[in-house]
Image (cartoon, rainbow, N blue to C red; front, side, top):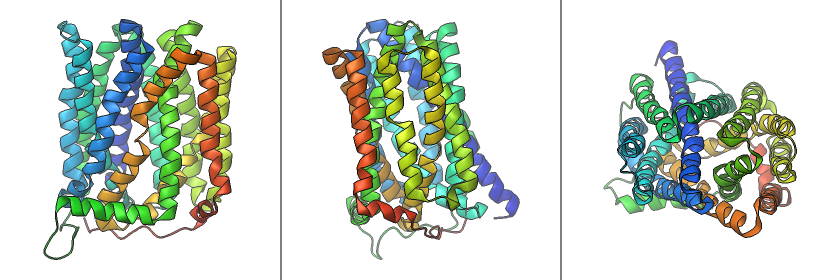
Length: 416
């Protein structure tokens, strides 16, 4: 690829991520708020999150061999286009008075089933885009982190405005439209394969055998296993925080959906700044100690301030600092993961890796709902916050984590 085309591929992928993640952030605020305000049930709010994320995790895990066989580009484009219909059906059915709670659960389950393979394929595109652009992996993952956080800032702010202006159900139309734009950007810019990746030995093997090859590679790498275990725990707790604890806090405090959007936007804004710094300096920072400090600042404090019922200005100040610290985490962990996976296994291992990392997310909303119902909001925030601290600081006692400071070259990709 020429230098211009290389830059186009990188910017196109980042643009696709920006648009898609903005829409998803709108949905992350609008959908729980819609369920909470129409049903009055924190438990049903958690069940809705479960109905979307359980199919998402399973579909992503099993789609890896398909991504390696067909290629990540066509898979992610097809998944995005189908997601337009799945997500768009929710506001349409609501407008037609056909959206019962079981129908809503079915609609979000289909949306999750489509997003899983699509997101897995987008992640499998990263090494090819990075190799074409000839940039350090930390720079690419740092830029991706900045895009993710910026999309979170814009999406959360838009969510609060849209929910207040047109209602939570109608705000989901933005998420549906974002999938269409994302598909168009990838269709125009994503690298194409000039030859297929050899995913199996000569003579071929079955789909499940290919899936097992990815699993065998993943489980034998102690660093990848350690990262998966930690991220799975924090994702479970983050899901409880974002899908139930924060909306309930906003309702109890009187801030409403606007407070939810502002809190997420401020945290994401801090993360944008942190990710941009990580993009320019991440390849020179000590990975392990950056991880430790980042999680100490970004983890427990945000739970504590909500539990104490402090003024919103204090909550937002903690969110800014915590967001900045969090911006260093994904660039570092992402670089470690991509450096350790060979290109022929990229689709399978990244899909399995992220699906395992996300395995607890479907239960996060349920956990949050059960804790709020059984303990009350403040005790639930303390329990989840202390668990978050334990999960993120346990690696200090595990010697294998020190090996994340080892830097490896980006795996060779298939020419495109």
